[in-house]
Image (cartoon, rainbow, N blue to C red; front, side):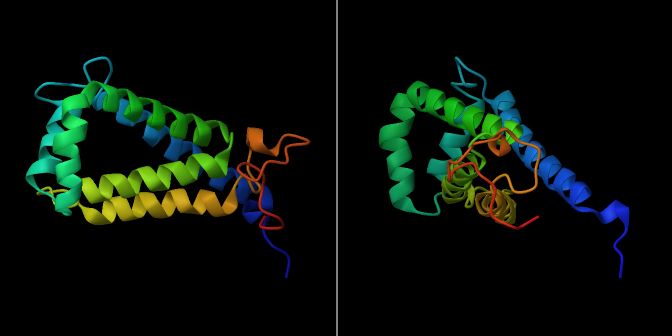
Length: 166
């Protein structure tokens, strides 16, 4: 049976590329509610959410870490958060070190899940979905997609396409 041109490998690659780019844009948009250099502190943005992590802990040890280490050094951790989310976002938007960017994105989302799952009106499934999306790109790399990683001669595991997936 002949497959439709609409469902070709090119269409599938474009669809997966679009998903990766949208995930990258999601990470970049996270900067809008906690912009440097204040990160929304003292009563909004990052400080507000850190306070909620302390008030509604899923794991008390994590809440203690946030209270004793992160909050007193909020501006340092604000910059770490900003740089991490920018690097994840750019990695996924450009398809540069795709696997590594997605792996860091999955780990960063696990951190968010641990910190925020106990906050009233936060949805744990949302973080589970983000972990899953990031792990898809850990598995696929740049396979069949428009990306910097697929450039001729690119041999790095963190970016290269998975063999024969698309």
